[in-house]
Length: 261
Image (cartoon, rainbow, N blue to C red; front, top):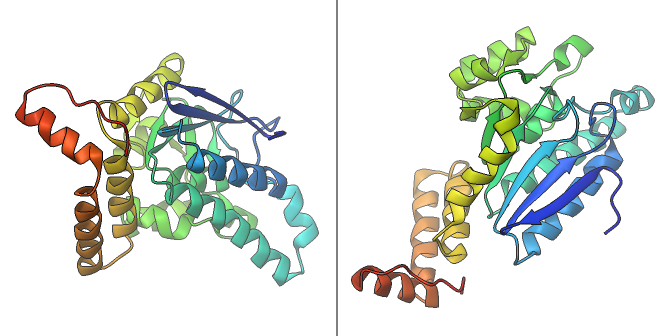
């Protein structure tokens, strides 16, 4: 596909998606649409086992495109449409059954942080800044920030960061559990690749995708519903060639040769 706001490369079964919308990688409606299409194609691409999302230049994603808000003010239906569009990209990233890592290389604010919260794993540079400044505009986070942040941290932390509009450094975000790892700028992408590789190397994608689904979807289900999903996905694996190969390799004390079927 022809892209205007993203660059995508694939290395060793890992897709690297770079938001490239100068000057600040703002999420315009067109950028969001393209990003949704990119992730849909990656979800269907059998050559891709994991995804890294990062930003071009100095920014990860500075937030939504505020210029578009100006035209929508006074029209609740347009506001609802914007919110729905923004929530969908975050939902679709979260629903990926291939691991998605956010490599936060710079300012990650508003809708940018909400997109990062939709990813399964987040790493950051020390100099990156993360925050939800929407209340300073007379608005609220609406790409899922009011819901995901409290689930990733806790209600008190989500309230504090949202109501104060405080901007966190990478290290502060790690202390609050928003990012899992902080690395120097020049090591960010290589570290993200190493982590992505550790998620998939030596494993069958038939089990990786089911594990991601059970954990991510189970977080929004009751324990009973999550356990039922887990039982179902576990039992499905008994019909796969990779499960037979994995068990046989363990018994025979050798490395498995998975074919992802």
